[in-house]
Image 1 (cartoon, rainbow, N blue to C red):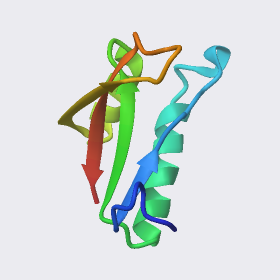
Image 2 (tube, rainbow, N blue to C red; image 1 turned 180 degrees about the vertical axis):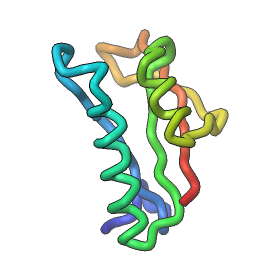
Image 3 (tube, one colour; image 1 turned 90 degrees about the vertical axis):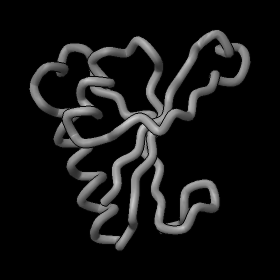
Length: 92
C-alpha cells in the first residue's frame, strides 16, 4: 500500500458513502472497520480522514470508531471552496 501524501505508515480514508435509504443500519461502521482491518494487516500506523464540518452523522461515526481531531482544517477546492472540513486520525 502506498503511503498517503508521502507519509510512510499512513493511509487516507476518503469519499466514503452510504446510500441514504441504507443509512442507520451500521453499514458505515462496517466499512470503517474493514478499512481499519486492512490498514492493520498492511502494518500501517495511522489512518487520516477529512470530514465536512457540520456533517454530524459522519462526525459521530468517526468519533465512535476512535478517530480524533488533529486540529488541521481547510476548504474544498473551487467550486466548493465554501465547504469547510477538518481532519481526524486514528492511531493503529
